[in-house]
Image 1 (spheres, rainbow, N blue to C red):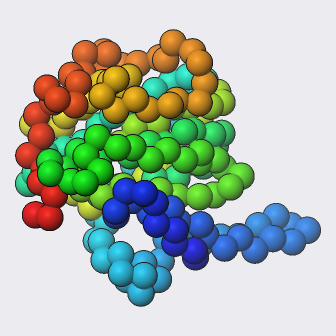
Image 2: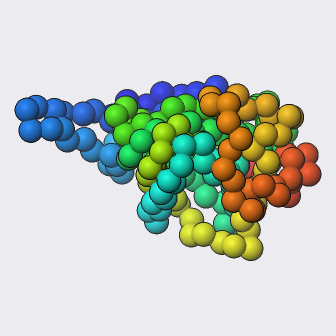
Length: 186
């Protein structure tokens, strides 16, 4: 497995090795000891799986407040998404900056999104499945979001469509108004 750091400290692209032959392919999508060797010491406790029927579905930008913050390891297992992490750690040199990456069933890349970052994705195809690991259980009372099109963040989403949003995501506040208890270096 290859690990590539991004412009946001802690956000890492993982690329598994794929072994293929005339029958198909095999890949290892998670190996705790390999992540530990790379300095990624996270105890994932739950796997989540989402399905989005329509191209242009946008989920996010989501995060959970401390003490129930989550690290996520995200991959797309059917179709394609544009996956985004946004640094929301106050006093961070990259506060409000974002990193985006296309994750597809074909490229098998994964994105590690640590605590202190908001996460979201837009589907680039129809019938998309996304699977991700988390290191903390879902906590409705700590669940928060930031508007997908906040001009302060200015994410460059790759397709120019009016996204399909949940009611919750449609009402999400801007980064400057969102509740946030993350601090850089803490």
